[in-house]
Length: 189
Image 1 (cartoon, helix red, strand yellow):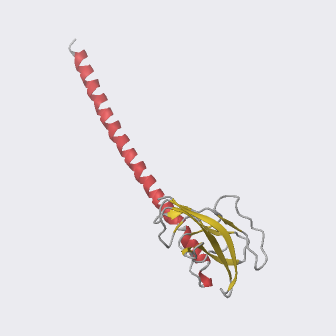
Image 2: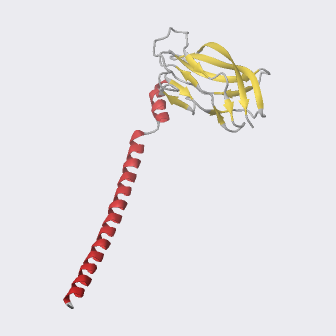
Image 3: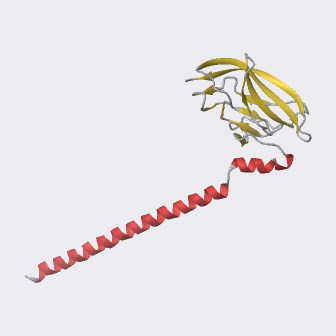
């Protein structure tokens, strides 16, 4: 009868050893998986690059300075019309009510130079008082500015003004026209 308890103890020891091995194996597999996914994530980020760099490369031969907030493509899906425009015409999207949390924060500029356009554009906000509070750098066709900060400090409130949209010839970079749209700038704090 003494052999039965010894056998039970041996089986319990074997099971305890197996549990330890399974625990270690699970830990090793988990750590390996985390490291693998981390490496894959870093590689994917590195391979995808920066969209701003791709945009700058695309227009490098034109000798222009792109706006630092400029991004490739439309503001939102299905918001772009790639119908070719005549020289001197412009199709665009504009937020007529840009909103800023405070004077130091980036706000909802939301300007899009559509793909079918044949001009670089530059936009600026000018208050009814004549003060210029924002100016972008060049925005090429098929790109947009979603958010940008003001160039001047504004107190809390609403400000009437215009968004001046300057068109530039893509070969000579000479200005060829100006459009103006009424806007209301809101600074929350």
